[in-house]
Length: 273
Image (tube, rainbow, N blue to C red; front, side):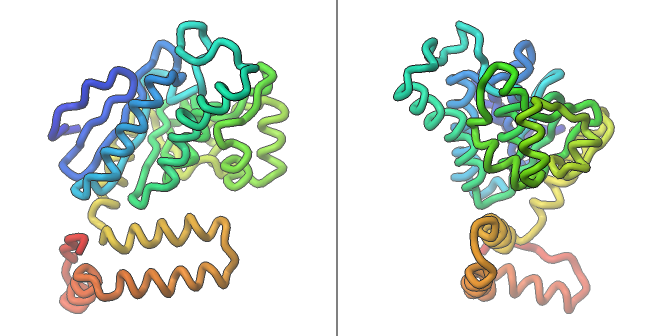
């Protein structure tokens, strides 16, 4: 990949700008299979915020390094989390300010997010992947939830995200039995969008990101807004959202350019206006 701007000095979640309009957050704790710490969460959130605020960035790729994408929170004593997990106020604050903040930030983004699952993605790592719009995985990746093995819970958003991706019965079974699936099974169960050979993951994820970056930005944002809200809304409410989105996108320069390009049989040149 050609990186057009230097990465930030973040240690555990590098932010890079690729090919001008594509950003990438790289979870970089390979020695811990991508397990997150408070510092790592802060760096992820900072990267998401940078992407959200920069209109020149059209697509975000989230990926990892080594054999792991992310295995959830790091439970080792030096990770930086509160040692006493029974301290209810402190634990609730940690969830709210770290893993919950990442899931919320990803799902609230009005621009596309693609997850390139390079390795094992379990527990909070799976919720981070499911909070993205598209998930491309290497064939060697493994996905699931093993929180129950330690007497813990899918408390990073899994109860919501797992059931919507897999259906209640499969999600309950995965969590209750602490199952981990190979990439092909995860694809079949709805946890993934696509599986590719390990060697093709970077190129495939970038190819999709480039295609997304060429779409009309306003229309793409409206589509994401409508579909995210449709997860919670009735059909009538979704139709109302569609009416509002048409009123917003229809008069845009991009919509007019799209019509002209269609009639002139050429590729449209979208500006986001």
